[in-house]
Image: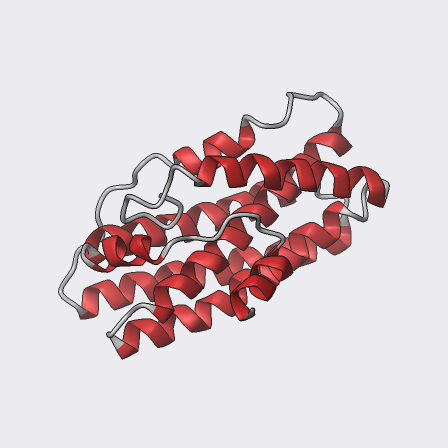
Length: 201
């Protein structure tokens, strides 16, 4: 029941199998490198929203906080790797994010484009949160388990922030319809995932 409630809270429609956690913990170098760059990309996305929608004062303030926090997370992951004698690997393409971006049709309307970006960002944060929870609960490494439990909370907060702003810039019913359709699309995609030591792999 707790797992179901957690998925409902995040809006997700597919639950990650624990087998993914087994794959991830068997290749910590890979999962930590992927995670570090995922945090960097999240920071870059927040900065990009600031640049493109600089007139939206409240959103700019929120995105500034997210960008700073995501880079702090990047630093935390990197320091954890260094502590364990690891070197940050090369960035790899994120086919998960690319797949989500392909869901919405291209638009020249600034508001529609913003809604799309916010919903995709919200979903990436929600899935990251869910993956961190699964990972933390299936680790014998207490330090790493506690680390991911802490980050899980931040990801959940970011998810609600992005979704909340999306609902401010367009009619709530329209936004929620787009959100539900995106969730269905992502859930179907995730059914064939869970076989790589990547946050969204």
